[in-house]
Image (cartoon, rainbow, N blue to C red; front, side, top):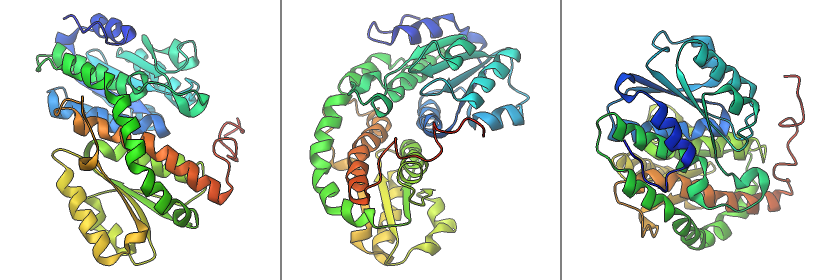
Length: 334
């Protein structure tokens, strides 16, 4: 099945090499921030396709060794630098079991890139400092993989509206940066004083909440955090809520939005407005984004814009981003 010309060429090449008729399961495998994009990828596949899938931490994927892994399965992996040893090991393990592997990385010649059947390069501003167009991001690449698979396995072919939407995504992000600027000014100094900040979301946006918690607040700013699913909040975590607790809530679009709205109501009922930072996707200007994909792209908008917020927080804390980390990229013996 031909894919749109604007699809990433490595994605098109990988999908054309896969026997779609024989495909029976997809595994999304990674660690940390790269794992966070696997949640919205699975969400999109669940919404649009019939292929079953799972999301795994790379080390547990190998340790658990799912019996269904083997011929007829596809393993999609991601590591920004391509040097995450657990993800590289997972790729090797999957190939040994007979699965087809696609690896997303900024360095196709990296250990992950050479361990997979099909390496796919993406761009990332967070490590290089060089601005990118969002259509070249890991989110964009993995969404192209998912919707290509959907079309190839008998689902509706929405690859053209998807790529149209991805080409309009950067403009939507730029508009969101302007729209959210007053929120950053309002909340940054107060959140910078906190030892604990929880994140919350559901559906396609849960991965963005997960990444903000573990890879930004904890890794970059040493602020204790936990990503809480908007419905799981009511099954234990809401007991920590009082007028001192701080939360970042991402209100998405689509079928799970009601879960976020319920959480927001409770946060404002028992918390304080100054401690509840709400990013509401319904207030974004999503012109050029197909309505069928708006719920899928808002987590990228959330996360991209929150980087500007966290840099303001870091300035107030005098805690250097990236270079200020104690262990990440500085130790090799763990």
